[in-house]
Length: 178
Image (cartoon, rainbow, N blue to C red; front, side, top):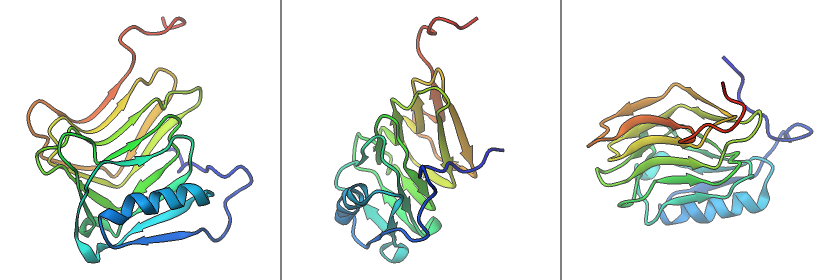
């Protein structure tokens, strides 16, 4: 298997900023603060609250290296209705780990990553616990050049017609494919 991605051009600093979160409403604010800080800043979602009922989808801007880290299975993000729990933009460089996404039987996607396709690119997901999403737990859409690498995935209860994990390329392959 490959190695976890390294996003800092000259190596990451030994210390990074950590933004502690104890409320659902504080997660997006912590993400925004981590994005502004950069260099692999960490959003740590503590298990103390248990369930975090998200008021809206969590949005991570593209081309930004941040880390969102929970305390394992006891950190549960409950998706809002009809939208993904987490959406990451073009050239997503976020590292997401050690938390459960619970679709609460009403979310379209658990994690949605779009526009990530680029020469040599990859989607790297490690240790997600994805649960009860209606459409897909994890959707990677539009890959023609990049790769998707998933490690230690726990996925339960895809509801309806959804797939647990779905990777989609273009409807018509780009030129150069044989």
